[in-house]
Length: 162
Image (cartoon, rainbow, N blue to C red; front, side, top):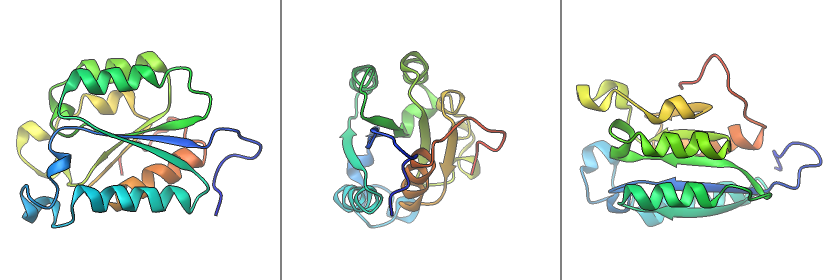
């Protein structure tokens, strides 16, 4: 099923994952589950392929590398948008949302767990200010939902959090 807006040459989604996402299946499996980062990458690739989209996967434990990758996306004429799970940088980074705002590419924030029901310090997201939507607590499916939103021509709306 091709969900891209009609006559669009944009067919790529950049998926950015922040620190410790590479440790899925090992780190706190009671919160994040037993599936691995490799499983997540396969899920995302399959999701994008079934929608006629190409995905580029990027993961880093370093804030500057994430900012660099966001900035490098500027001017990519094939890019529909960015799906970003900034992980711990959600609650601490100003540089990541600033980079998202600077490039002006629609971005959807994703969290495997529901950060709004976790520790107090995890309930604040600086990234959400720069995102057209946030999906939290849906596990891997949050990535699918984000891809579908971008493929459908995501625009900022009143209901940003899901």
